[in-house]
Length: 421
Image (cartoon, rainbow, N blue to C red):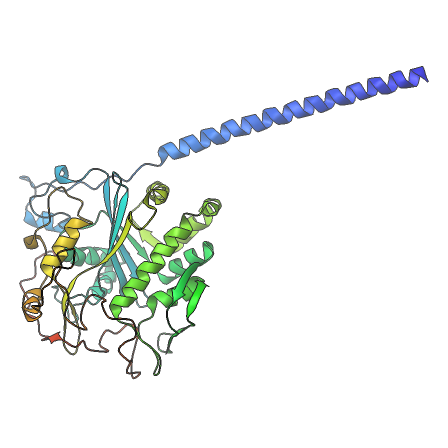
């Protein structure tokens, strides 16, 4: 019996030693993995840097005005790289429909010093001074896309530049697939739908049917919510400006969802969506850097949405939205201007607003120094659905549906078109 106990004791001792060795080995492995992971994170994060701001071309003996024009006049004449604000970035956002019309055009800015972001939505039907039959901003991408995505982007850059005075530093072109895949990946967005949104357009294979109330919208339904404007007979419609507000709401809710810590684990899936559906001149590390800044722009005070101010809407048959030039310049300077110097009215090429402003001479300062738009043709002041839809021949991608109450003549005098357009 003594021999048995001794043998058992020795056996337990050897087992205990082996267990201690295994435990120590596991601790060493875990510690090594932790060090490797920490080193990887450190190396990765150290490579994630804010984007480099494009250099403004300078005139010299070797470059003439034609060469400068080919650089898309990315800044107003006389501006140099020394006029740029520190850590201030601007982005042109282009949302395409199936027919490659630019249904959504926004100019965003992020101030890395104050950690504030601004987004200006420019109505797709904005009148631009270009040499084509339909002079709406929405047609810019398609007008240039004959030479590929780069040509489409370049044309939008030119036309946006004529409205804000400069070309944004970066661009992001996204289609509908990217839109709803991102929203599906974050688990949907919670939105209050104010009334039953219903619209069927077999020509576009577009079928919108969203009941009212607070609900979580998946990607496809959120896209329908953002696209909705026209309705079938007997249902409420909204103005294009209310649709812009809905688009801004969807973007805001999506940004909220992207901030959730659980989405860090879905980084690879987000990369796949971006790779397949989004065209941009931002590098992957640039996008990661902007993603890290999302937590810095929490709250409504740090992230602000705006809509380009409208002087009036033209008459039949086109119903162009005529931008209010002075108010547009003021808005740009207050929000997305990346320069330490103000953009001037002479730096933009906005046509038609002079007469429109004269005909809507009910000028009242509204807090931002902007001229309020005329009744029915303005800046989204109407309550959604107050004007009953006609229900006949409406197409979601056509802007010639319901005329505003106060119109200016559709024939807008065309000014001389610069060579760069």
